[in-house]
Image 1 (cartoon, rainbow, N blue to C red):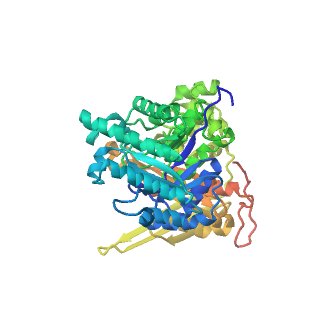
Image 2 (cartoon, rainbow, N blue to C red):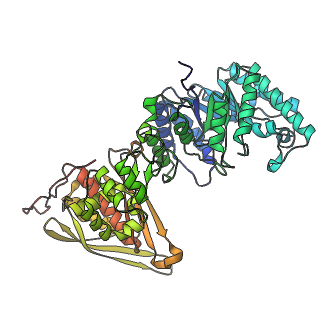
Image 3 (spheres, one colour):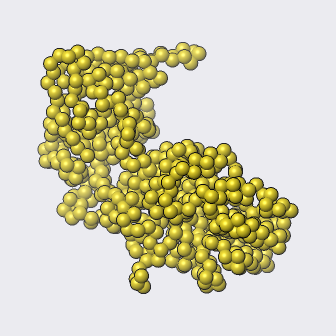
Length: 568
């Protein structure tokens, strides 16, 4: 390792503990196991699975991990120091940790480092706080667990702050700092694996973090310090970077920046932002190329949409939607990118929306392997005004590709919807009856179909499936995934506003977390029409991917099979 080589830094993910403190964020036990396996394969060093014994989810997950393959990644449980007047051996957090120590060998113990919390929350003395921490660490070490200590509110303790971030009285600030140093000294003397400085309320600045971590590293050069930050001031990633540059060997956070209030430090941003510039090495270069797929798998596991503007891993992270920029990118690739997207498994995105010009359509169609000329690009614009204005092609490159194929005349005529209508009746007792009627053209044959459903979109989809699965058996393997609806500029257009429907799909034997899903979009002033457009695109995409997708006439009549076109 040369002096110019970036220093290796550990990744500690707490998505399944601290991250789940975000309101309305949920994950199933099977999805959590899959995500942990994905993190292990990527190269995350530690993953915290929850608060020891705090809820049924943690208990079930701990059991489910017995057969999971998480590679070299170490699993951890979070817990408290033993309580006042309670033996460590009788403390429930520690008992749970010991019960699962064979599979989860790391114990993360939170210790209150701010005198304000010691005296008012714990209602004890600094001396007793030190004793509780010392005995808890010793007990866990005696049972062969690796112990990490999270020093809660350490940044406030170091900077002399109290409630609401206000400065403490000078004497109290000094006593608080002395207590923080006493805790750190004790952890170092006990050979705690990692001593983690926490910016619990996210109120610190990069300068403060740098000074605090740098000072502690100088005070204990043989100890290993980590940093756990939050994003309340918007400095989470910057503070994590400052801690690493000041000597921290571990950064704690959540893959997606999830967590209470404004969230934890976003690890994908830290990883990409620092490693791409050679400031730190979190994973081998070969693994770094999996960062985008890991992040997208995490969004899927938590049933979250990938934010368009998420740094490094968002769909817009390496894209341009401005016509002038698109024109420049076409002539000089990379002109508007700060790094090579391929290094994190991403590709440059050329967006098509109301702000982009013909140049973006030309470039994106060329990029997707369905190149249009100027006349064809204008034809696409004229035929897809709603999709362009409503961001439909921004939401789905699949739908854009299909639109290009229609213009080029290369989209096989597998099927088309001629007419449709929905009968939707509800009574005062909230009983509802919904039925969809549809006329389909399959090759040269006209068929009609109908179906009932839970709502209009469900009924329309069932009606399509009822008939099309006879002609295209491959559709039986396809499943709808997530479904989102966005109303566009309602304040200007009231109930006549455009609606964008985005639908994700997968198929039997295909794993969404491995990026084997696809997304389509539809835009219309009628939500049912927008949804139907997106679903039709989803059906077409799957059929084009399926070698046996040519229509099979269920009546046995002769039928001219549509030309088949595969694309990735």
